[in-house]
Length: 368
Ligand SMILES: Cc1cc2nc3c(=O)[nH]c(=O)nc-3n(C[C@H](O)[C@H](O)[C@H](O)COP(=O)(O)OP(=O)(O)OC[C@H]3O[C@@H](n4cnc5c(N)ncnc54)[C@H](O)[C@@H]3O)c2cc1C
Image (tube, rainbow, N blue to C red):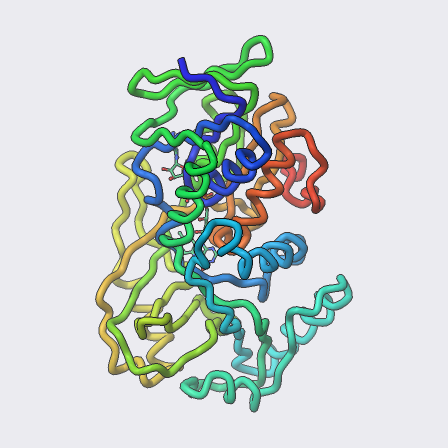
């Protein structure tokens, strides 16, 4: 039986960042992972570091997280490949431009000024390779992109260096709570005991919650990504087109990373997914239509990452209403990468019974 103050299930970015900040507060943390570390969404996502076009409830969290990205060298000893090249969302027509203008007004009314409404001329200046129709757009000039695999590895490396015990190939299969103590058991017979348990199991968050009788409205999905071979440099900011499923960026080595939420077929029994060629085609058609330079590109790899989605698109960051000492930090609904450093800091406070720096009311379990 291994004893810790806090057990964290899942060594993705949410688990690793929470573990790191708890260790910095002097807590003994066991970080438990069913596979090798850095295998899932946190390692294979699109790397978008975006405040632009966030759900209004998520803006304070996203803005606070954005302040941490340029500090990652100090926090985890690696800049995680973060490039603040900006993120642009293009309005192809007047209707979309009006929607974005209303959005910016509402964001500003909330006291945030990172989203800027721009005219078509400024869009074309920022994105000269774009040939589609354009009535303007919005930009967050200090958003950008980073390298997911490097980021998760940096968090895990630092957490371990600061005393977090990482247990890999350790699939949690039972959790019980007796006499103010949690007993956590892995399928291979390993046992752990702690005062608190944090469910950072991503797309498996619902399964982990169910082991102890909690219900989370979270569904796993597999989302597709593609990357091209190296191309001449033609794009600086990260691009979205309002009304289209597209996230599009050219990274430092010249390759172009294309995502946007097209789904793969997912089998949660085997934890394997099958890419649907028709879905990939939709993405590549959007890209080729709007960026003719992409007609010269070759897709060299595609993959899908498994993510936990909540109906309202907002994560769950809360203590279980029925089981004190059990915390659920999951359901990041395909936009948790940017939030993760700040989520780790807030979750570490929450777990220790401290008042988090930001209100977490929008992410509570009461909303369901
Ligand atoms: C294709 C794709 C693109 C994305 N693009 C972006 C983007 O551009 N920008 C952005 O901000 N966000 C993006 N996201 C979202 C972001 O990647 C996730 O929100 C974030 O990584 C979630 O982190 P996590 O720690 O909650 O989950 P994960 O990284 O999935 O980690 C959960 C871990 O829990 C482990 N686990 C599960 N069950 C058990 C068990 N029984 N026992 C032990 N361990 C267990 C899993 O093996 C896994 O390692 C994207 C996601 C995907 C899939």
